Image 1: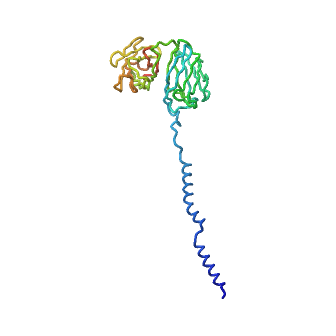
Image 2: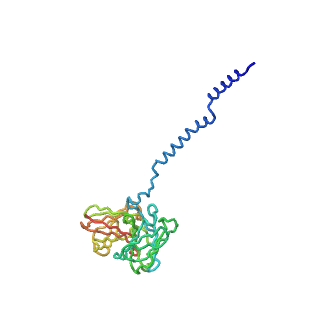
Length: 302
């Protein structure tokens, strides 16, 4: 019997069945295609999504907050000043230091890089040598990093201002004296003004930040200077009133408190009234036991 026609028919039937069945490779490709498309879509979305916003990206959009920390007077010509909390822990080159000697002489010092080392005089008078010590060795200004000041003038007052390099805005300041300090000055607190609000042509209010360590109102005096010439020193008498201790009476000074504690707390401050219109004022916070200036703020009345 001739089996050829039968064999060909079988092959044709098997061929049709093979064509009807998808190959294994085709099956795998069908399954993987949605996965590949999903991954591609995911990465395309990730690539075009905006990066998370760095809170320090707009560092110069406004004046960041900062503080100085502990100050140590080594001798008549040298001292150390620690950095406190500086917004965003910037690299040192984002900052500048202005050193003021006895209100009159001033020098502007810049960080030459982000490493430990001496600051360079960039303007004004050379009134001291400043060296930066990066305690964490991370090329960022952190709490505990410090400035070492040498070649200072004995028996003088120095004001140290922290400046935002890109804008020239002052971030904070502190004061030290190069003299033989009595025991009452061994632990001068860190204290600064938060801000000033001019109410009208004869009134303004100035608000404190926290003092560290906590400080009684009786330990703080206020020096009010009008137009750079008339100067009055005020101290708490009874209650919230401050009375003139010495100098010229250039305004009325009254303490206000926002907390019930005996110590000054953040948000407490002073009200200034009976000021003169169209005048420039400087308000100094003074540590009463040794008359050290902790901070100052300046404003003008309309």
